[in-house]
Length: 169
Image (cartoon, rainbow, N blue to C red):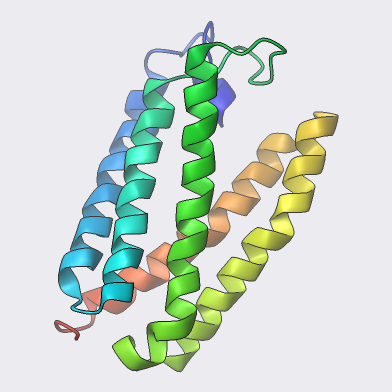
């Protein structure tokens, strides 16, 4: 995904406005909503993780990777892009992990705790094919998208739950 707006890419300057910036606003806004919606410190922490995911998405868009995204001598932009990517990965791993433990008490939905656990396990399982494809150069974009779709599906389900709920404790 990062190569679409890598330094020197034909769409380097427009890609963040089509991809990163709108998503960053949506993630940050939803994270703020989650943190504000719940009184539970753990639920607020999950909201903060989603908000931080939005900020990292913004940063990843602002700092493009170098052409090819894996140079031997990375630029400062490449390093900041990579750190943002790591934060992107970790924040949407931590947020569902929190709901594994609090879903039943906060939402009254045991099934969402199980779904959150599946999301965490799915992301952990995807680390191998993503890492392997990054090293081999084959199918990296496919595995990256498959891996990222797991927490995005979790976020969609979470948002649907919140749409149908009242202010929770």
